[in-house]
Length: 367
Image 1: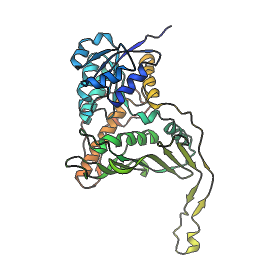
Image 2: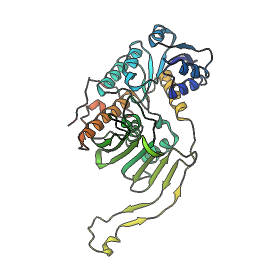
Image 3: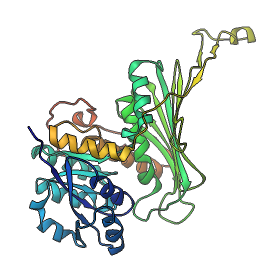
């Protein structure tokens, strides 16, 4: 039986939106039918990838032609994600919305509920979950190759670009929070964060974040718009092996260090006792990855979920989890780093493989 071609509209044709247009003009199983952006320049540049596609300057004009498309990709500023996505879901459209899904957990919760009640696909653009390097690391963790996971850390820094709508934590940290949650298959219980605004008043442009996961696992994230080095790095420390993901290099993005350290359970009082700590040296390897464009994989996954009814890897609930953690980050920064507990409701703690759940309207609670 032939599958139905999915007609897609792209809302927001800036950097990411333009790339979505490029991909949808190429991918089988989909047809790009409309693009929308208030900027004539953005529309003109995006339409180069899809000559003849219908262009809209006003979103209400696009909504008036809603019967002409089945799904939409929302790549606008974060502050508009909630209102646009809600309208689309109310029109029974499947939605892929860029991160963060919304700028409040209450709004994200509402969208997740609305999508489930209407049996629609709601997916969030956590693009690194579709990166070959992160997929490789996930396979090592799940297979037990790394041993017991002790902690993870990530750095995501550069000189700008400085956003006007959100701070550096909301702009950059969603990537690494989503990665950590995905790799550990869990959500943090508490957050401690500090941040400062060096470039301008009112918006944090550098932040240091600690996430406390169950079983004592820790995640540390450094984000900055004011750093001279562009760094995109994730490191996982296990009892048996360590693994580094570096997204700024074209090859050898993943490096595995088969080195370890194991301490005696007995306290040491002398140098001889100290030698009971066993240092284990080993090989350093860089596995050959099946390099693919993460955005293409993400869009393909979205289309397949619509066609086959599969559950998205980066579903609305995972987007809600990231937003709730970011709210705790903001709260901790206001408290100059004091830990903030995240009070999850039972459904909010579900991870991949979740079954049908009853959703309740919830709000982020911190203390």
